[in-house]
Length: 107
Image (cartoon, rainbow, N blue to C red; front, side):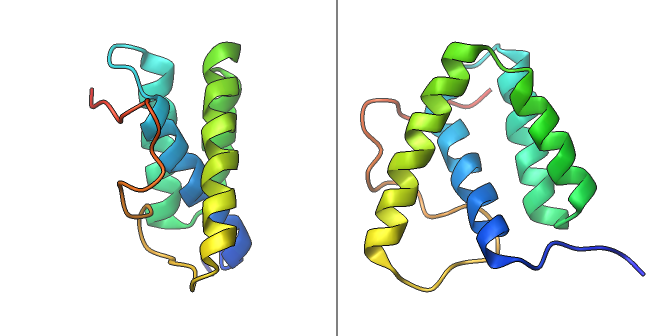
């Protein structure tokens, strides 16, 4: 039997964190790319092991970037809470609204 993440709150948190990483992403920083990829893998597979890997990747990111990511994640969570729409369980949230000055950057 394969274990999957079915807790909507956990999935929503991972989605928010993935979007926050995109907002703070800087090309060429391996730790950010690893974190982005591991969060996307966790969303794709819903595997507890993938979530643990993403947590490990987050802990290896520079403290300043972790602070920036956390700040963006709190803003995104507040926006979701205010919109109070149904939670999505596939992929990352739609892009665009509430982005601020840190536009996403691709590696």
